[in-house]
Amino acid sequence: MAATQTTVKTTGRPQRLEARLSADAKAIIQRAADIRGRSVSDFVVSSALEAAEETIREHDIIVLSARDSITFAEALLEPKGPNEALREAFRLHQEMFGPIEGE
Image 1 (cartoon, rainbow, N blue to C red):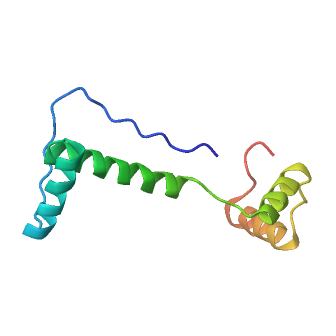
Image 2 (cartoon, rainbow, N blue to C red):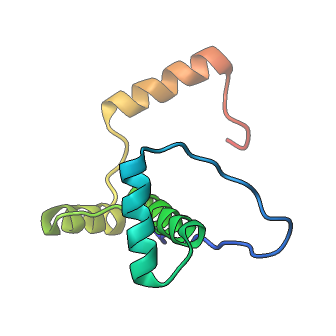
């Protein structure tokens, strides 16, 4: 499964984002922005975007152990037929809703 690539549009009218924070938090952010040679606004926006992209990556990427990777690949390469529970569910579905179109 491919990871989602987040792209930030730089066109259009800039949007506003406001936040309330303690004086201590603002001082820390100001110091970090100064160290990087950036404005507080630029520092906050870039930091928030990095955190947002990381959160999206963590959400979108599935990490499997070696054993699970092998099990998944085997299931794709040698699929098993439907088990009894799936056959029963299919039968009940047909009973309730009729045959599936195209069958």
